[in-house]
Image (cartoon, rainbow, N blue to C red):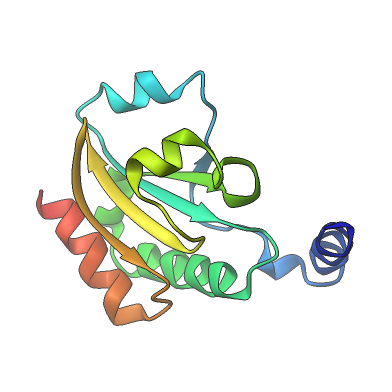
Length: 132
């Protein structure tokens, strides 16, 4: 566990380009009910800062947002896997691993993709979220 924290800090220092560049807000339990009760289309990004797959996925999302300004209509929420992965909330949502994207609107799930760091898959997912 300490090795992950060290490597995360080291990579953030040496590779600043890997920091999240897309417009995401961190998940906070206290603000989740307010987000959930809106009509906004929310993308829950279950991620780990030490995961290369998660970093690739974030870069792809950043590129896709740059290509299609309509994605700005989506609200991106980063959920820290190390903190919330073992939670009851993750169990209720049936999130079994990091690198999971879940699109929700209100209390309804629009779609999800798990461990698919491919531009085509993420684009299809974001398009479905916009269309919902």
